[in-house]
Image 1 (cartoon, rainbow over the protein chains, first blue to last red):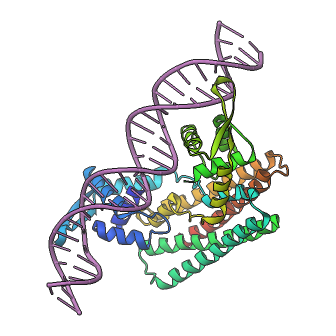
Image 2 (spheres, chains in turn brown, purple, yellow, cyan):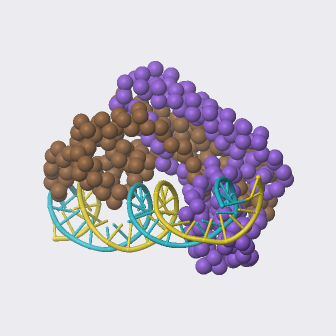
Image 3 (tube, chains in turn yellow, green, cyan, purple):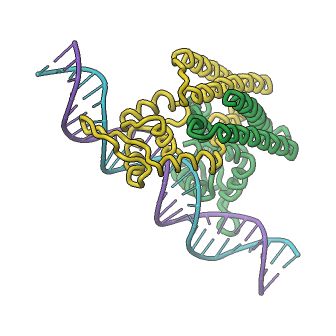
Length: 170
Length: 170
DNA sequence: TAAGGCATGTAAGAGGTTACATGATTGT
DNA sequence: ACAATCATGTAACCTCTTACATGCCTTA
C-alpha cells in the first residue's frame, strides 16, 4: 500500500492534479516507485473518498487539484514513523543466478558480464541525472539527492559483485 | 512471470512434489523469490497443463512428484539466455527517504539509524546462514553461495550509505 | 483548424497474499 | 490414539499492467 503514501508525500510538498503527479512519478520517483496513470487516478479517487486529500480547486479540462488534509498528513507521518519498511525481496536478476548451472559455462559468464554492463550503464544514467537536476534546498531535493546516491552506490556494488562472481565461475 | 521459471529451475536439479518445492522456497529461495503454498500449487498445475513439467510419480497422501520435460528445460534455458532481467524498482525503504522532510530532524535521523541497524542485522543473519549450510559442489550450492555474497555486499553497502545519509541530514 | 498536450476515467487480466478447507500417513 | 507432519486444493481480495475510451484547451 505504498502508492497511497507516495501520493500523500508528494501532496505534502504542494497541491497537484493527477496529471501533475503522473509527471512527477515519471521523473523523480520513477526509479523508486513507478506508477501508471491508471493507478494514480484510481488511488486519488480512493484517497479523496477516505478524506486524506481533498479537491482544493478545479481548473480547465476537468482538472482537479488535490490538497493534503490534516488526516492525510497524520497518515503520512504515521507511515513514516510507526511502520517498518519492508525488505526488498524478489530479484529476477538474482533468481537467474541460482540456475546458471543449466547453461554452458560461457553462457553463464555472458550473463554476468551482461550484469556488469547493466550496472555501468545505470550508474552512468544516474550520474547524468544528478548533473541535469538543479538541486535547490527543498525537501525533495535534499532527500532526492540522498536516494540518488543510493542508486550510485548500489550500481557500483553490483558491478563489483558481478565481476567477482564471473571469476568464481570462470 | 518468474515464479514459473523458479519452479522450472528447481525441477531442473531434481524432481520434487509441491510440498518439497515449498520447503525449498522457504529455505534457499526465500531471500530472492518468496512464494506461498497457494501460489506454488496453482502454478504447478498450470505448468503441467502446458507440458513444461509432468507428474513423474505418485506417492502416498496424493503426493505428485513433478519432473521437468524437454519443453520445460528449453523454456528455462530460453528465459536465462534470451530475456533480460528486469530492474528492481519499487523500494518502500527508499520511497520513505524522499519524504523524511515532513518529520522532525530527530525523527528523520532515527529512521536512518533504524536502517543502519536493519542492515547490520540482515548481514549477520546471512553470515550465520552461510555458516549453517554445508556447501557441496552442486550447482545450487555454487550459485547459491554467489547469491548470498550479493546479500552480504548489499547490506554492507546499505549500512554505509545510511551512515552517510544520517550525516547529510544531521 | 489541426496537432499536441492537458486531463480524466474504466475494464480486463496477471501475479501475489491471506485464509479457508480437507484429509492421509507416520512416529511415539 | 494422538500429534505432527505430509500433502493438496480453492476462494476472496489487493496491487499493478495494459489497453481502451473520451474530451477540452492552447498555440501555431
